[in-house]
Each structure stands twice: as C-alpha cells, then as structure tokens.
Amino acid sequence: MALYLLFESASGYSLFHAYGLDEIGQNTEAVRNSVLDLTRFGKVVKLVAFHPFSSALDALNQCNAVSEGLMTEELRNFLEMNLPKVKEGKKAKFSLGVAEPKVGSQIFEVTKIPCQSNEFVLELLRGVRLHFDRFIKDLKPSDLEKAQLGLGHSYSRAKVKFNVNRVDNMVIQAIFLLDTLDKDINSFSMRVREWYSWHFPELVKIINDNYLYARVTKFVENKSDLSEGHIPGLADIVGDEDKAKEIVEAAKASMGQDLSPIDLINVQQFAQRVINLSEYRKKLYEYLVTKMTDIAPNLASLIGEVVGARLISHAGSLSNLAKCPSSTLQILGAEKALFRALKTRGNTPKYGLIFHSSFIGRASARNKGRIARYLANKCSIASRIDCFSEVNTSVFGQKLREQVEERLDFYDKGVAPRKNVDVMKVAIESVLSNGSQEDDDGQQNGEISEKKSKNKKKSKGENVAAEPMEEDRPPEVAADEHASIKPETDKKKKKKKKQDQEDEVVLSEVNAHDTEQNGTPKKKKKSRVDLDNEGDIQTGTRGKKKKKKKVKAQDD
Image (tube, rainbow, N blue to C red):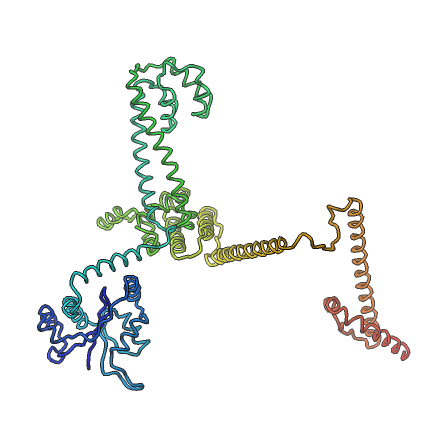
C-alpha cells in the first residue's frame, strides 16, 4: 500500500511519497537511523507536490486551521489534485500520513481519503522537516527561517489577543501591588511616627490612624507655632473639634525636643510621600473593584473583590480557577499547611484564602469547616460562570450569596435553605427577563426616533384637522367632559348587573318548574361562566325558553 506524507511548513503545503517501506519493514529504529543521512532518506521519501502560501496572512489562517483540526478549501484542493483518484465504491490503494490526528479525521470525513498518524509517520515527517530545504530547489534556508519566524510571531500574537475588558492579568498585578502598598505604607507611617515623636510625642496617643497622623504632621510642622487659630484646620483634617482642641493643648505642654528647620522639612517631605501613597492606594482599590466587576462579577459579589482577586492571582488566571475543583479552591493558599499535615499525618487545613471572607468569621467554631466547604463550592460555580458565560451579569453571584446566608441561618437556627436548582432557575429567569427588557427598550427607542423623524419631514404648510388638546381648551370644558364620561360608565355597569340578575332569575324558574314536573332535579344547561362567555347565544334562545314555558302551562 502506497504511503503519502502531508507536511505543513511555514512556506506552504508539501506532499511526499514514501518508497522502500518493504525494506524498512516499518521499523521506527531503522527510520531513525536513515533520517540523519540525506542519501539514504532521499531514496525512501520523494517530493510529489508543493503549494506555497500566497501571503503571510494566508499562512496564518492555514496555521490556525491546522491547529484547530480543520481542513481548509485550499488544502482540500491541493490533496485532490495531487493524490491518486479513488473510484466510487472501491477502497483506496494508498494512505495519507499526517502529524495531527484531528486533521486526519477531518480529511477522511470530507474527502474519504484514509489517513494515519503513528510513530512511523512521525519519524518520517521528522526527516522531512530536517531536510525540507534540500527537497525544494528554489527555497533557501534563510528564507525558510524568516518565514518560520514571521509565522511564529503572528501566530503567537493572534493567540494572545482576546477581549481586553476580560484580561485577568490586570487584576493579578493590581492585587500584588495593593498588598505591597499596604506593607510599604505601614512601615513608612511607623517611620513618620517614630521620627516626629521626637518633636511631638503626645500626638501618637491622640491620633491612631496612620493617614491622619501624616496629614496632621504636615499641617502642624512646628508645635511651638500651633495656636487656637489652627483649630478649624485641624478639625477639618481630624473630623472632630474636641480632638483638635486636645492637640493644641497637648502642643502647649509637650515634652518633645525642638527640631531644626532642615529636620522639620525632611519630616514634612516624608509625611507628604506617605499621604500620596495612601491616596494612590485608595485609587488602586477603586480600580481593582471596577476590574473585578468587569472580569468576575459573580465571584466579586459572592466573596468580595479583594478575596476574589487573591484567588485569581493565586490560581494564575480566571480560567485556571474555573478548572479547579471546590476541594482545591477551599485550601488554595494553605499549601504549606496541607503538605506539612500530609507529611506528619496530622489534620489537614480547612480553609486557605477564603478564610478572609466574612462568612467564615460569622460562623461558629464548630461550623467553620462546613461553611468553608460550602463557600468553596459556590465560589467554584461563580468562577465557572464568569469564565465561560458571554453575559456579564452579577445575578448569579447575588443568588449564591443568598444561599450562603441561608446556610449560615440553617447552622445557627435550623431554618431549611432553598435547593440549588430552584435558586438557579430564578437567576436564569431574571437574566433572561433583563435581556428581553433591554431589547424592548431598544425597539421602543427606535420606533420613537422613527416617529420623530417622520413628523419632522412633514411640511409646515399642511393643515391637519384635529381637536384641541386639554391644555388648549378652557378648564371648565375639560372638567365637564370628564364629569360626563364617569356617569356613562356607571350606567353601563348598572345595566350589566341588571341583565345578569334577570338571566339568573329565568334559569332558577325553569329549573324549579322541571323539578315540580318530574320530581328529580335536572342539571343546568349553561353555567354562569358560559352565560358570560356566550351572551350573544343567550339573547337568541330567550324567546324559545318563554315559548316552552307557555306550552307546558297549557299542558298542565
């Protein structure tokens, strides 16, 4: 059976024919030995056809199709032109060796060409790749290297490009920077406290917050210059007038030493740096919150933006976090404790990064492990929805948070929580209803805009006969019209009630007459609902019922 080899290079498709397979006996070791020697390998494999790519974009499209296991129209035409044709109803006397099994299955489904991919074929293709520039006369090794380099860059660039708003790498960098800033601001503020305490030691006990301490240090500068006129400015910074008075009184009786102007300038500059870092930390936190609402809204609404960002950064990406089972997510961040427990055969940890969630802190010591396991389960569901859902919504996260709240109530009070199936049904219905409302709003806005455009197109000279509006009419006329409408509607309602009462009386008389004659009560021919629905039929049959009554009275 003849064997053809399909080789996809950066410059184009090539088809080779393998000879001498009986001598080799399909032994992979013999092929490996013959691959390095071109004279021996050239006797086994020969070039049949070569189809170069028209451009770099064409090469990128063909490469993407091969990587996804698809056969393009260009590849199909190349194979059908250069491979032997197979008659209908007969088996092919050759097979096509390919490197990718997915591509081989696609080729067989479309063209019915038998394909194979095994170690023997891969060794032959390895030899083809090694001596490819020798098989094609006009192709230089430098040209092939340039084509490979350009295709590699364009392919990698295309793979890296995806939705910019869903880039979780920004969240990973932001949470790392946020943790670093917390450590730096803490250490710098302690340095400011220690430095300025030589001049004003009483201020440390009055103000505990690091950010406020740095701002007061920048405002006060020299304690000897502090007077009662500075109380309003201190009250704006501290937020309490009593504390501002306390600072002024403590400055008058302070035990600190005096500092030179140069030392005070250095302290003020360092305090300003701490203030700037604290303000930047607030802006960075706001940025992290907005990015988490774009990337993982359900996870953020379930467990919080900071804890969710830490989970994503520890897993490496949102897709990696979505692939983790809930048992792995539960102890994510406690790997050292886990392996130490496995090594010493002790108790494994119950929670990792999710311990920073408020749910575990609210649970009792007995139920911390249970709520951690349940919370990890819900976090895995939320991360998978965020990763694979095309609709950016936080409805599922809110419903999952309600479930965790119900589970806490179940552990504390014994109130039975709702089932997950019911909660997810409600969430899906709300998402679908919101989507339909948005579509309806868009259609209504489009119709309104169309109507406005049509009205604008009308000329001013057209005379449209219309009644005056209520605003144009005098108020007395409008009031009279409203008053006349109300009694008319009341009269209609009274007429309907009278007609219904008369129908009931007629039916009751007929039934009573029938019971007196036969002695057995008969069923009503029409119910009350039928009378309401079939009012037109009743009006036509009333005369017949009255005639029947007269006939029966004459018989009696």
